[in-house]
Length: 143
Image (tube, rainbow, N blue to C red; front, side, top):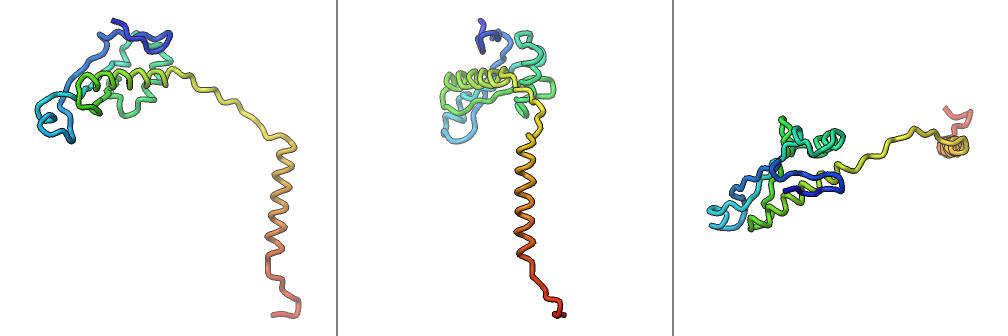
């Protein structure tokens, strides 16, 4: 089954590995007995569903969620239900890939206009004059 992330990116659910683990935190005996937390693993480095450019941006964007081998690990344990945590993990994966799919704008070098340069120099001159007038004036006959 294919999971649609964007209009052009589809991920096969066979590429995603889900592990159900015991969650930490409050929840009483339910936490100690039931494996409700979800650990989603997606091998970004070897996925054929992602274009190279998207793969590189995703690996940078994932940060510490990415292992050395290029596997993205998402842990979902927000809810007490295994089904809600599984949906949350898939949603977080899709959101991360969508954020990586947005191509950053390329920076173009710009120069300040001559008028802006003139304004900057004028204000610098005014500030310097103000500071110069604040100085203590010593008369010639004072020691």
